[in-house]
Image (cartoon, rainbow, N blue to C red):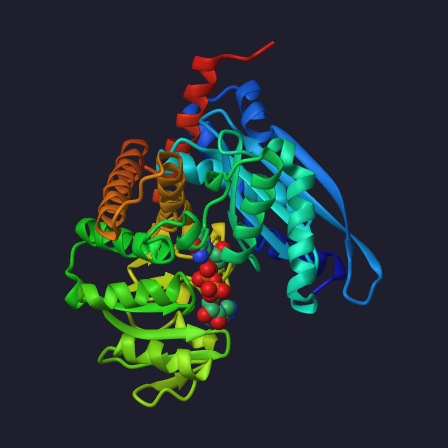
Length: 428
Ligand code: NAD
């Protein structure tokens, strides 16, 4: 192969593996179907606001280190912005910008009254003490304070941030505004305004999406063999709930390897083993597999719930499932997704399938503002109502335009935001 064609192939692969290019492609395809004019597209593509902040922190060794943080608000036409904050060495403005747009479309698909945002701080949290992380979080909150607030922008956890980070943000914000304001962030501990059912919400939304998919492709949970990639907050919870619903979970994985039992795994026992041993490998009632083999197993439904770019042009021809429910963000590349749909596989796209988390974040915000907290049954039944309704709307849109569920989801989401833009008009 000449160096020119090798470079082209390399570029094609980089493009295939860039989830944000995939999203941009999804946006453009949907905008074409909607016949959006160039001006509207430009408004919807451009982030409303981008903030970059310098964050000086006293480190434990008495040195001062200056970190860089970002908050990007992509679009606030439909309500306050909503989106996670990640702490990671590879955070950069382009990524935060793209993730903020993703949140606009996700909130719109499930029709909750939020726009999209995302935040990030460039740091290596594993190399920092708890005290350093607390200072960094508080300084970041103070630095972006002017654009935060229950009616402006409501962050949530993302990579390497969690309940504790949200508690520090809530406290810092509250100290500045001189009153306890729990509704400024979601994903908080239950004791300070968190919602029941939040931890399981994304996995529960995945299970509800699988149930709805079966209603279209046919089949009962008891006859459906499921492969779940990832055993964390999304995959582990989805596997447990789907097992309880009657699905036969034949394989689970974590970053170290996969386990497989064609007769179905005893998922509660597997999760207890994982809790005790820190990894799945060695679980006695199953055979061990390489992670690269897992998605190609004989099965009916795959839940990729680990990370992006797992079903790609390299393995798509060997995928045997007839349904893919995307628990992770961007687990199927655009090329692979199109190949699956061409073969008649139903792909339930991430912006619908994993929107259960942001939906219960919305419930948390509502409960905080009311100061009245719901039972877990109420949270779960309202989540189910929204997921079922959204699934139906996406499926109907896909049918109407004769497109995939992914394009249908983008059409629905973009149309909702564009409709608000037309109604509100341009402020001048
Ligand atoms: P997590 O860290 O709790 O779990 C990730 C799991 O994936 C772990 O079991 C890990 O060992 C495993 N894993 C990592 N790389 C793997 C690989 N190559 N093969 C197999 N397993 C691998 O994370 P999470 O919260 O479950 O999030 C998973 C995905 O879902 C991410 O893409 C995240 O952005 C997305 N997501 C999460 C939420 C949420 O509420 N947690 C909401 C929406 C989307």
